[in-house]
Image (tube, rainbow, N blue to C red):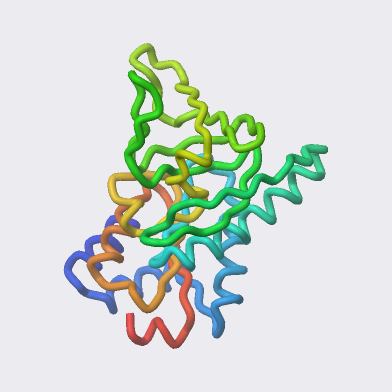
Length: 219
């Protein structure tokens, strides 16, 4: 099914792709962005997979969804007695800078190649988890392993190295080359058949589209 959806978008057969999504209960529509985002985040949080991601068109949408995910995660952590301190970081995002909140256990993605040490370079698209914070210094365990297949841990001073963001939701551009088990697509004004093909070819097992009803007409 997921292959058929991606192929339909590749052929620019939007009606066919939407029909497959709808008939398999993978199309979720609502009147407002707030309703769409709420449903998307609910489904994402229910998914037990460790390899899942949300794809949106713009940095603004990505930040909104990441904030909603983090609020849910903070509630779960609090129930487990994990009341981590929030750290405010001025990150670079596109051509601007944005204040974002981070804490231990947050999952992040690096958005630029950065030389951290003589023998270590962080790559644009590298993902990892914050395992410790101390003032502006974060300790991050990367998803990728070293040559001995052991986890790589790095320390970065966020005042010097601030090209990163949360990775629960990422843009279409950042998703290229990534493969996950579950993919949740936030459709929007900038979604095209080309970007939809990229988005819908990211997943192995599950994919779903979340979109405002009026925007689906212009998909």
